[in-house]
Image 1: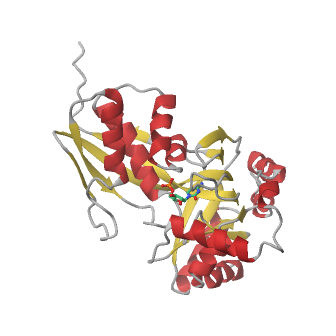
Image 2: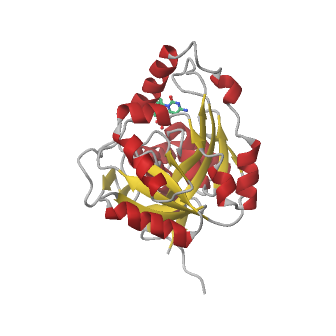
Length: 308
Ligand code: C5P
């Protein structure tokens, strides 16, 4: 005997991301910078619980005041976009449990939006295909499609055109988070200003707008040392100019024995690569001992998924 499966609520978990490579081109007329990036989803998650409701609302227990709880919230915008796209008449109440640092360059808001899309699609039984969800995700923000996708992927365009990367094994990262966040548009604008100032000396950034082959080989082989040699982020210089403390954090991670350190996305989270789980735990302990907030995570992990 089967029962009509009308769920009372749906819980979806979506990961935060690191950009293990981030090449940034010159800003386009749409205000966005073309990217060549490699995303890796890591084991730091946002949990979004969706309950049937007439209107659209969100609660984030323990959230700081910088997070909007009205229609500016990206998860609410995701739910509304799905309702409009499918003609679904009802609403949803979303409860978000956050673990990804807010405004940390790890795509936490994007993970919330991706999780809300998947949760509402299941709750409302709107049955969208992966590609239809991807299209809605790209309308919400450049990093939202990757939070749906997960794993390791090359992102081009605004970072929303994804191609999966063959990655073997697991990479262990130590993340140092900052209490203060950085604004993504501010960091991109800082990079534009920096490049304009250094125009005479700079290489043509468009020439660099490709993921280096050695990076793809390192991901395929699962070799942390080879990966460390190719990790890079064009936004790092701008993030450091916005928050000079990041320079000290990067130096502290290297002193603690990390294979490499890089600012994640637009920062300010800094990611340090360990040789193994044990080695990363050691780096984490050393960074904690000097008073930094250091988390040990691993990647790649899957994208937004319904959990029971
Ligand atoms: O798409 P998202 O809302 O995440 O982007 C926030 C802002 O970051 C954009 O409005 C833009 O100023 C900047 N951005 C950019 N180039 C990208 C991604 C984001 O300039 N590829």
